[in-house]
Length: 517
Ligand code: HEM
Image (cartoon, rainbow, N blue to C red; front, side, top):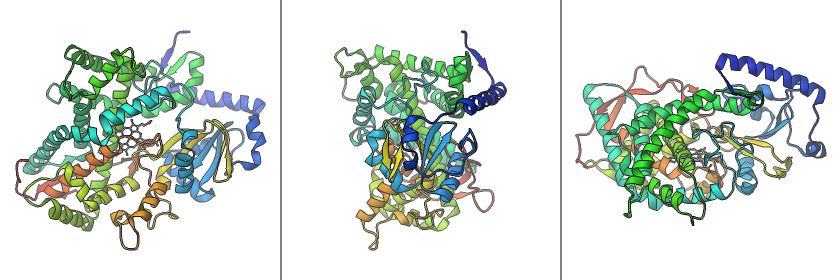
């Protein structure tokens, strides 16, 4: 049957129809799976539910991390929920998250047991690394990512490229200061992270000058606006697809097509001028593997393209949003900004600009970044799937249960953090009363802005670098003024956490233009 593509209003009607049909079906045929009947008494506690739909109303309320946080603070850190008869377990404390992500890591290493709904799409499709089940492909790509792009050796190798982009970022800030113009911090950070990642993965063939980095940026912004639609399509859309109706397929495939064309062009340029030298970029490496019949794993052109799209998505907005949150916190806490500036002044001095290699000598800056990530995690919800039934916190988790780990609630849990809603970077500084070991233990358990375990973020070091140098530069070189007394810290977003009122602030140059480094 030919697929029909529908718009959002129509989709809403279909969703209602689908819910109604599920209601009728469930009312007559609803049965607990055998495994659930067997372990009924061992399941985690369950909050009161509605007939038939179970806890669906909690699962669809927005923003989900907040409504889940409310639920867990009332009923406990490990909760059994169901949407109709689909089992879901909500995890909201550090110790429970530790069991899932570390102790039983292998059992929860896959995100989604279903094949992505738009299989052929480069964006959100089945060629991706992020949605890949734990298996040979995922392991092979992870090794490549760590050894060729995101591990410390590779990051050292590409430092100069990022340094160039930081210089452009700093020049833009000085220019805005000279013109007394406000900076849209999120937007400018997107430029910095996106251009840096483009240079790191596609090297010589992708730059701001020939417009490719800008095209990527436009596509990333468009893709982020499609995440929610994709999630709807992945859930209710599966059933509608069976009767030939495709939710949002046209929109997603259009963006996929544009990524495809852009990346195909860059791949062709790489193939026509293969780099035989030592300084191969990620694209060179992947194309070599793709052409090598004896490679440990045979990857396809579409898999290369999908990985790049995921790196653009995973590596740019994450750091850009976090930097915006941290800058907003610093403007609202002038005493913390002052202490940070003093640290930078004493370590970096007044004759040169801060750079990546300074970060390891700036513990207070590191603490500021960590505290920003704790309070404002870009991805407040982590999702995993139970490959097999197992015990967590003494309760039984049935096979194929979807695990929702609320990292937002874990990192604001009053049982683990003092004054959990306050911005207090000092909590991440070692002190005589709290040694490095104790802090390490607390971080392993309760601090998960990058997830954790095998499936944790492989780009965390790069994320810390992007945010650290950007915040360091903004604090070292400028004072900041805003409209009004305080930055409005209202949150928006569902699967990602953004500022409802994007930060716009005006820089006032405070240092003489320093050395030209
Ligand atoms: C502040 C910056 C960043 C934050 C907050 C962040 C956060 C996350 C989170 C929460 C996850 C899911 C982890 C889990 O399920 O346990 C993740 C996964 C991932 N991130 Fe990041 N990330 C950041 C930067 C980056 C960068 C710079 C890159 C690469 C350029 C990157 C690439 C990835 C990839 C490829 C995955 C999927 C890993 C897998 O499925 O095995 N991230 N990130």
